[in-house]
Image (tube, rainbow, N blue to C red):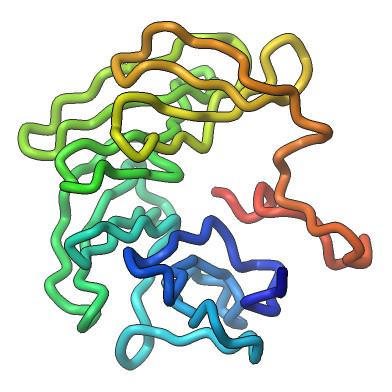
Length: 212
């Protein structure tokens, strides 16, 4: 394996359909505003590219089969977070899809019709939600006192994998697409804080420090 990018602020990567590129979000600029970037997976120069002059402001990209990228926008001082789509070919055709109080790490089905994401309720508890993009209908899939997050679809969209610290230990969990049959797959050796092994501690604070 090799490092595709060189900044610790680079988070939540998503492969293009042909696996030649990876999209990610980063606070790497001096203004500390999150933008979307992409990098070529077969290059080792660790260069990140932006879409258009000034780039696209946003976080947590998810690259769809049809070439769109779904991503979230959090605007400082606002009470709602937004789910947007943009063309990966041009960086244009941006479209607002959905707004809600808390939306992180969205992952869409291949057709873009259904999105799962992690969100915090009014008590600050993180759970997993399912959004039907066409009508904005939202279903809460998990309802647990522990932290549930970073959901991803299985290739056939019949199952959802996610991480949770239920029982006081982080593990990889799975459930059916409707939220039923939650089960532990394997315990994880540590926290899912995004810290990078072998990086100096003064630089290595993980992706959680950048979440609003």
